[in-house]
Amino acid sequence: MEINKVLIIGAGTMGRGIAQWFAQQGVIVELTDAVSEMAIKSQKMIADSLNTLKAKGKFTEAQVTATLNNLKVVDLENYSTDSDLVIEAIIEDLKIKTDLFLKLDKTMSKHTVLASNTSSIPITTLARNLSKGRQEKTLGLHFFNPATIMKLVEIIETPWSSKELANNLKTWFAAQGKKPAICKDYPGFIVNRVARNFYGEAFQVLESYDQDKIKEIDEVMTEVGGFKMGPFTLMDLIGIDINYDVTCSVWNSYYNDPRFRPHRVQREMVDSGRIGKKVGKGFYSYDK
Image 1 (tube, rainbow, N blue to C red):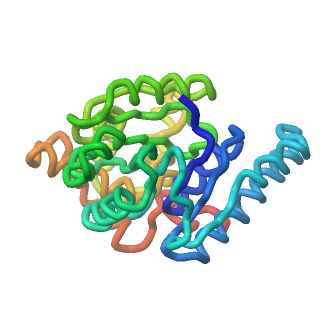
Image 2 (cartoon, rainbow, N blue to C red; image 1 turned 120 degrees about the vertical axis):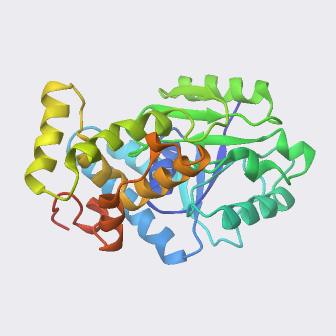
């Protein structure tokens, strides 16, 4: 399988990281967003990231130039229709995603593979009303933040998706240094289902917002448990709002099973706008 050109729709944290990773692999990338300023800002952030890596001696000038040359920002209504792969990384809203996939089904070339980076929305639901030929080429590709560093990619199959396509994608990603895992379209897929307990048990111990206890739980998980990050540090990195949305989605998908129930501290953090590192304040404070 060859992937020479990719369209990334959604220029937020995940879309930006996915776009940078593909560009670093020598793939031509078009990055677009409903808010054009967001895509332009992400392009600059990618350039800044690459220049930082160059300053640290991890990238050469030639590698930075080649990566940036592979990346192009386009208007949402003017993307190329001949990409080998489209990855949707927009807001976790079922209707908006469904409408986008219906549009892509009509506008993209017949050979184009459609994929969603959703954390929790069923891929089967997104593919259900697509044309038969497109259903075979639609699946989930769930990257993890930061996409340029985290190696795992979940490849989520639907009842209609081609097994040959899933296997070919697994081979392609492995050749680029990723650790792909094929899974069925279950709520939360693999990681987000398992992770509910990682976060949920931490909230049960926390009970209510307590900065000292937050630090203590994270320290226990890293220094004793051997995790690279504690649950609260990780939620700050991912975005507490995103984590809360995924928790609610998985909980609803499992018919309100108490194991997956959201915690009121999550809701309090979201309601107060303290949603993590991206805004400078979450369970911890960060310099913007």
